[in-house]
Length: 270
Ligand SMILES: NC(=O)c1ccc[n+]([C@@H]2O[C@H](COP(=O)([O-])OP(=O)(O)OC[C@H]3O[C@@H](n4cnc5c(N)ncnc54)[C@H](O)[C@@H]3O)[C@@H](O)[C@H]2O)c1
Image (cartoon, rainbow, N blue to C red; front, side, top):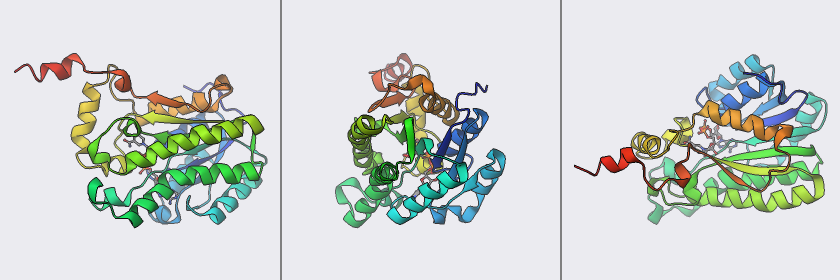
């Protein structure tokens, strides 16, 4: 269902790895809503070449960038403005990675080099994207910047490991940068806290299958899908949400405000 919500808007979408990626769905929906954008991902993630298929579908160009590299980000943002023919109206940061999670390292036994790497990729990269785009004056007034996060920033989910800390930092950056970007440039910055979703990053977390079923039962509306998240991003990138900024927005079927559901409590009645 297209409503021309992003007609004439230009953007950059980080993090479309394959068809499961939340960013992939955001790109498809943004295309339907009339936006033009550049797709980007880490050079290493391009080896599969799947992003080229998405680029073809959406008439987009792909610019590789490691989101931890200031140089790559400067190149990405300046080339994107050239390709798109003007300043940006939206940016999606859909990036997450923990080496400790990947290598099965327990939270109480972190390898701190890996911790720092994950923090840089998953959180600090968001600051870098905004610091560079602000210095380059690359975002139009009333532009909208979103990063994706998870409720492990507020509540403990043990197997989420150091990604919980990364997400807390990410959400704090959204608030702090959102203040300055708002005052100086009328740009809004938010995080969307998404339900567990079956993607490459998601399924890297130990016990994810069980967990996704638990969250489904604990959410009055059920888990929100990647496509539903993309729909929410459309509204947040549109002009209909111009005064929403510095918020962590739950997109989780009600999970965050639910203590228990009937279907979960019944499992303990036996
Ligand atoms: N899947 C879930 O359950 C879930 C729930 C809430 C939030 N999120 C968040 O959504 C976002 C997108 O994840 P996803 O679930 O779509 O998984 P995904 O694996 O499809 O996307 C993660 C992306 O991060 C990219 N990335 C990793 N290192 C990078 C780097 N150095 N530079 C640039 N890009 C890099 C990967 O290439 C990949 O495209 C992440 O922030 C994730 O934490 C996911």
